[in-house]
Picture 1 (cartoon, helix red, strand yellow):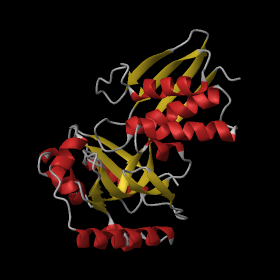
Picture 2 (cartoon, rainbow, N blue to C red; picture 1 turned 45 degrees about the horizontal axis):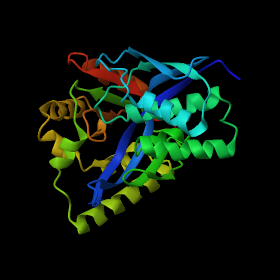
Picture 3 (spheres, one colour; picture 1 turned 120 degrees about the vertical axis):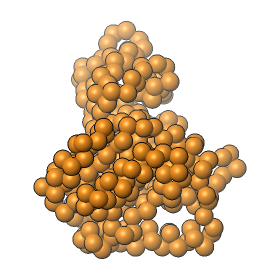
Length: 299
């Protein structure tokens, strides 16, 4: 049985996001296209003889993340202990690089990474029935945690973001520049300001999503699908976060294509024609007090 394991926890962007309705319990229904990207947090787990879990955070994102009991890493670890009756504990170390409140799914990815790390630490990963139990834990921690448990890089998600269908994309997508302007966008505030679309508009957008998926699956060039990228929450967030509007405008001016806010913000991304073009665009953004990354989607 291994004494120590390490798991990479990728960020995600939303290549498409439409709000299709609202449940009675207040949760909004979505149609979204998730794409994992090459920006990672890291979870390290080392087995200890003492019960319980201790969490250390190396906060490379510089946001003052606390290791309190509400941290998703500890919640995931405690869920694993309750589910499997783990007889010993672990020292957990989170190397935090994905900005929080940026629409990149960092917390959910960390939770999924913790589930995987403890599964490997306890040699559960090759046990199908055990991993089925792990997968059942995931949605209790967050609607998109199951996406990060999957190996695939792209998924069409529906419901509250918890029903997934894998999208196979045979050709690597272009290099991407991702910018986080240093502000948080609370998801409840974005939905509060959302102007919900009428049913015919939603149907039209769902047709747009279908076209986007078909063109990506066919390996079509950027010019054939950049105009199909969409985020319904973007206008709501631009109305109360001028920093996000500024970031989007500037990414467009640098020549990036398909520029879009991810999730409920505040990060914005755009595609470049080549790695060299992406690096050049990122260099032009160095004058701004943002975190900027040159990354690619994970297939």
